[in-house]
Length: 335
Image (cartoon, rainbow, N blue to C red; front, side):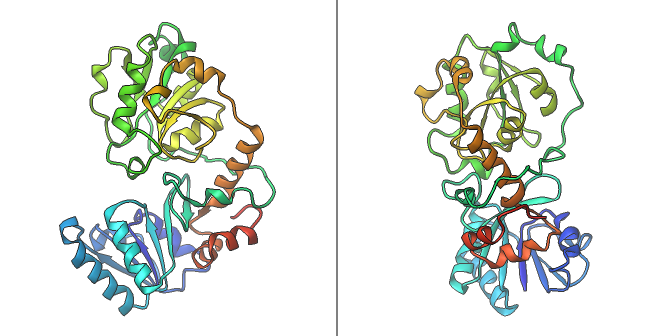
C-alpha cells in the first residue's frame, strides 16, 4: 500500500495512469473532503480525510500509526516538509520503518522528490547533483501559479526613473514552509533590510499570486506592480527573492538575483543573509558572477533527475531506493 499524503487532488489522476502504480493499492490522506479526492481517483484508491488541528497532534499521530500499520502501508509520499503535520507523519514512518519521500509541485506534470528534505531546507538531495553527465535540461513549459496578462516592456520601464538600476522583488507567501528554515534573517526582516539599506534604489514589488506580503506600501522607494513573471523578466535585469521558485525561473532567463533563505539556486545567487549584505545592492548584483558549468549541472539535475513526471515508471523506483543508489543508477534524463 502506497500512502500519498496531502497531495494536490489533480496529482491523483496522473498517479492513477502511472504504468507501474496503477494496479497497486494506494491511499490518499489529506484535509480535503473524500469526495474531492474521488473525482480524480481511478483504480485501487482509498481516500481518507483526516482533520488536522495542531492541538490534537498526539491523537493524530496515533490515528496515523494505526492506519499505516492496519493497512500495511509500505511507502509514503509526503507533500511538503517543515509543516507540523509533516513532522507527525515522519515520526510515524520512522517508528514503523516505512520509507518516506518528500515531494512538492514543480512545473507542468512533474514533482520534486527528495528523501532528505526539500530545496528550501538546509539539507536536501541536491547534494547528489555531481553524479552522471550533464545533458540538455527539460525546461519548464509553464509557471507554477497563474499569472496576469502580458504588460509591455515600455509600460513597465516607465514606472521607474532608470530601468537599468531598478530591482524587481518577487514576493513570497508569508505562511510558506520555505520561510521556516534559513541561513540568516527571516522574510519580513529581509524585506525591510533590502529596502531601507538602499534608499536611492527604486524597487518594483510583485506580490505572490496566492497571498500579499503586508507592509510593503510603507516603503517610499517601492512600487507595487501586478505583472506577469515573463513581462518582468523581459523588462528588467536585476531581481531579488526569498526562498522562491521564481529565482530558478529567472536564472533560466539569465537574470541576476539577490536571495534570502534556501532554494534551488543556493550557492549561485548573491546571498543576502544578514543586514550588512543588503547595502549597495545594485552594484553588488552587477558584479556578482558564478560558474557557468556549475549552473549547467544544477539546472540539468533539477529538471531531469531531481524532479519526475507523476506518470513516470521511475517514480516507483524513487520511492524504493535511497537517493545515492537511485541517482547512481539513473545518470541520464528521467521520463
